[in-house]
Image 1 (cartoon, rainbow, N blue to C red):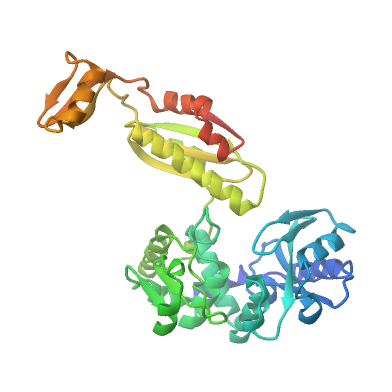
Image 2 (image 1 turned 135 degrees about the vertical axis):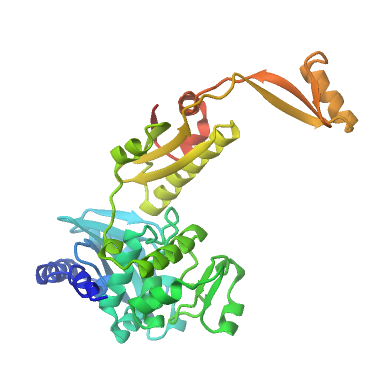
Length: 404
């Protein structure tokens, strides 16, 4: 697979990008004047596993353990950053901060500077140990291939609204198997459940950390499943992509395909497509994205409960979220059967007959039913009704608009 050498070349950041990265880190470091706190590059930048064109930067602000163990280091860092930068507060296990400089998004993360993992006061304190572990194994280019592969095959990103692989999980997997190709070959054979790590360690995991189909013990923090956020859908999608790649290896498996709305409509000229535009709520991207996903699934469920058969559905999110539901063009019948209890459940049957009137109730086998007029025959009409009247939707999105 000689083409992988050329693929990797296209993933390695340029000298100019490395220079810009260092300039931005230095710019922020020079503005943070906190006694006994050290600023350093973190994340994929520190690990040297970042990909060309990536403009996300993690910066760790490491506070001395002895001096700051009982202080609010998030508040201290926030107050310091506000002196020189416009910041957004992001809520996590410990609050951290987002700064936009030019077209770069920087996350400044306060952590306690510890010497060993067991001294961590918060999960984020372990982050530098992740960097150290990845750097030690020197699989940068193989990891870049793994990340690009997962991005292109729609299974990258541990955010709850994505449910894919985190960058760290892919780093561990690539190191565990000894390279990108070995990862792909092994993953293509993964079964319904895959366990990677010492069996006794896995058995000791909290049950909540063992629900994913892939259990991947974090080599730095063995109490953690690094793949806990991976959904069943993305797990199977990755296995399928690995098999497809091995059957027909190609550089196409590393090229992200942008969603093409026109292509979706062209491919479904014989179908009915309802498109919904959702304006997200304000907040942290992961939280906002999770709410948009809930919105999408809620609308989908309501359509199905109202007997609209969805042939295909998908959603995409940039500045606005777009939901697409594809149906057969044929409308629902004007009349539908509304089923009640079995006739031998006398009390329930009596209530059903009383509600609908004896003259309207019929029997089909052991079940009672009545014929009622549908309120909505077209899915687009029902969606418009939902947007206007269903107050639950306000919990998930600021505004919804539908195009039928």
